[in-house]
Length: 383
Image (cartoon, rainbow, N blue to C red; front, side, top):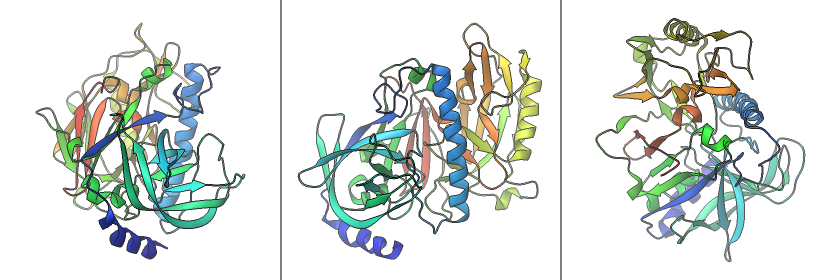
């Protein structure tokens, strides 16, 4: 199937017209703009649900990392939705935007198992840009499912694959967008305040992230090619750094591409040994009252101040050629009234994930041609 799709990709993309760039709304599944939104849920209930989905998604990614040949469709597996239209005339559909999947799927029936069966097809995809102008791109290969299962609902119709593989929508549109896209994710607190603020995803040449305060790091090619791999050297709290290792025996010179960046995973997952060292450093560095127990699977928790946060020394994630300064809200979130918890968690030694809480309020640009990911601190509610 992959050979067939690769053939379609390389033989048909030349038919598309050049597109400068376009921007789409990226709707969080708990946003008031989402069909999944439940107004009866409190902000903390919404957060708990997001944490549970994060643990489930991390488990799925680990399985996919071990067995990349098996193409499993996990519906509702991401946190963000996109509106697209398929065909001529265009049929509107709402799909899950997933940087952890390559193949785009839509569905025709509903079921209760975690699988989908159907046909491969080629159609014109139309995107409704925030500029008000529609962008149509022909000859997109996608799956059309008719025997589906899992947690499909009437709210969404499938997945749009934004991964790094040849069959992803990003690579199928390579001629039009020149291998460039970016996104800006609003912080969780803005979402949970029932704000109508929306995250955005941009495609095309004009989406380059630039400026004096931009830091850029290498995008490392590894298998499975679905994921976007970065190289994390360590995290510092104040003037002390914890060196990152994928496992206790790994050597830095061989430990390249040791973390994936994923917009669909809420939490950040790191190796167990690294987590213990980071947790120890944080406990020595934070002057706040520690709370015992676990809150939604999060273990390092503190009483918050009147602003719903805590004071933490300067936090920097050290990637290759890029020192990314994080805010306290990038690694701590309020889980209950007066309680905040660390959103970096131990995930075993198999694969590490930089989740979307750590990415909030950054404009993050992917240049697949130059193999580079760039970060720029941005107020994403105003972007």
